[in-house]
Length: 372
Image (cartoon, rainbow, N blue to C red; front, side, top):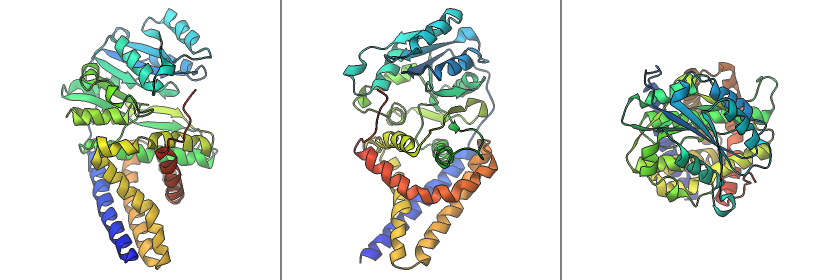
């Protein structure tokens, strides 16, 4: 009876997973990548804590944008840094008036320091559109222009963007950096495909934008204030619940890059923090929880079937691998990722069960470190 129930569960999970996979594939086809000639005023907000090594590079990119300088401002929310972060922002602001420093208050009195920093920056923002990235990210010359272009449609209230790691030469980087890079692409491909099909599943604070009026209309971060993470994906769910239109920007000028991690422990800590949001998805978006559950069952439980015979789990695995590879080939082409990186897929696939078990356990118990 146990095996009958398990096989039935896996067949149901496979059906659900394949439904969403084809939905994601269709969503990636529903894309417009041409820049539109609109110039809404933009406030770029960045939460920064002890980012003296990465912030100068990002600020340099932001002062060299193609966007008219009098149409955007950059607010760096210095979250009580103990290094030279504040001094760096002040030095930039003396030369470029669109760069502004905000010294964050009440860090020790709030459950989520990043949300606190971002919300204080948004309160200071003067412009219609809020655009945000992380202090350790890097954006291209046309980033603001590309993300702003999506607001040519007045119905669009939030725009999510693509992000990837920048690990360096693929041949020279470590196995964990290859895994992280591939995993980033897979995660964002699914997120972009979901949004393209009208399913508001996921996004990242590394590259996100929204109309300021709509941010305040959903209550800002107040409804998710108690959650240490989720200034991005949980905010997306608040926009979904308020029936506000969200779009994923697929123009390649809109992409952001972030530094690659250095170790498996650092990767597990980061992804456990992300996974800590999953327990709230059942409340905020049950459909997203259903999709994640189907992926989890297929990734973890299918291996139990090896105790019965070899051909049944092998059939599940080969079918899933074939369809996932087809989807990823489509995504790699859209996001302009080198095709040879797809060769890493089999190793990524077989690491997944152990990786997912670890981050699910650590995330559920909030076992991860936040920047102190």
